[in-house]
Length: 326
Image (cartoon, rainbow, N blue to C red):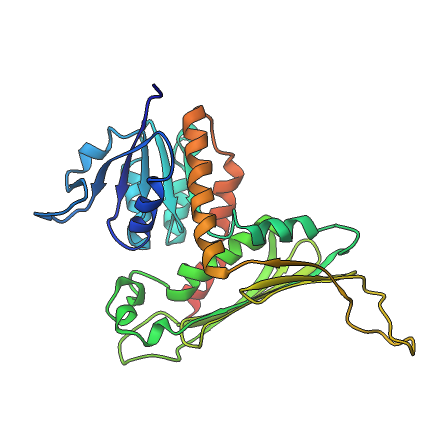
């Protein structure tokens, strides 16, 4: 009989609850503790407010509010097991520098989770880069939106507290900054700005953000994320010989560039490939695949490449810039 991996989760609702459901589908994993700092008298979960108890777990998952991640990592820097931390691992430059000083051997057992990293969308995008049918990337444009900022759920949560969260950029945008870094390499320079469209009279993080990233590989990335508009998701990658477009339901890939009408004028290239991919399902599947990858490494007692951590930390740089600017 295989030995089970004992797991402790920090956090009990939201993303933590989603992860707990997914753990039920991963073999040889046993949820031993759910850490919550406040005492809860009755719960079907294996709750504890004793932090020392979770240190016995082979794997610890940090899925608490984002502003607590760095402090939990600091408390766990001598933990001999593995750590899966929801993005972002850090919320300030100071926390970033402190994290970089933790032992290298320990950092190699830490994985930062970014959604879309393991999604079918990311795989398709990666397959197009430098593909002759697609050509060289020119620009990548991402637009995501929904109306969370107008809801009481947002207004009364830690997500809308500017002292604890930077809102849509830190909660959504960081996924796509990380995706951009993984696809196209380092950022050369960038511009960023934010708007308040649903401000209800208290100090909130911007609910709408714009980022323009100049990449080292001679291309541009534009990111727009909002909690103050109708539900809308759109990704466009333009190449020198074709383009990729995704509307949250369907991916279409168009090629070649040299497509003409009967008069010899340029026309939009034909669709050469179509994929049906639901945005919400892809988002959930990516989380599941990320967890499966994490536990595969744990079972094999291997290390995670430090490049993943470095990219995850670098994804926060535009966010730190905008935090200081606004």
